[in-house]
Length: 215
Image 1 (cartoon, rainbow, N blue to C red):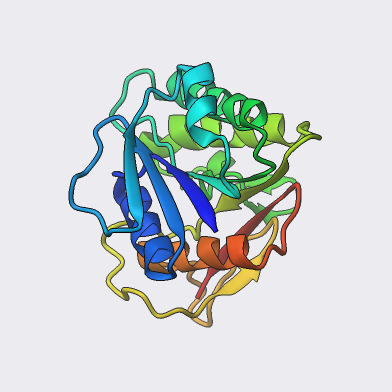
Image 2: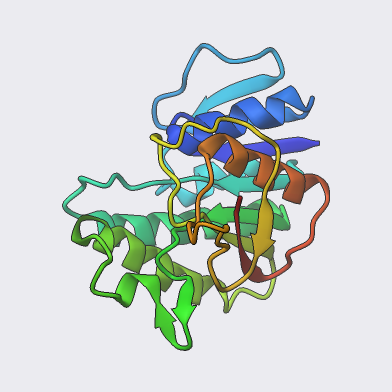
């Protein structure tokens, strides 16, 4: 398959490129600052995600678009940049004619109790609040999308560069609620997040809805 990955040099983007490439797919790795150290089946493209029409031209002809765009956790305009960037990418996918679109949001919009989302709890870290709120608000926008075969992926609550389990290839899926293990932890490595999304592209199970995964 021919897969476009947006945000390809970030923490998750680089892991997605590695996982999809290892499965033999033809990858277009799109980022603001492309890496030159990529496998032979990966083409790198420099692009500004806010230039919707140019991005749409890049995306044309792909089987699927996987979006790992992150506006930057220290960005003072994080909320607006994430929301506007995500909408621009979504519109570019529509203009390109690609139907399958998978985007990564945050865990903050997962429900931990009836009508209670994680981001609204007192324990939620304040430094991640703007990004999590932007991802939640974008999910609500994406739910109105009728043309694309989209899926919104919320990672496990614990999913960061400090998770050292590496690639196990094992995970459990969920939808609106976090997936917890026997120790009441919702945890997943970045490497296994890439496995989840590669599996979803190859064998789609989630259509126009949000899903999550953890060990």
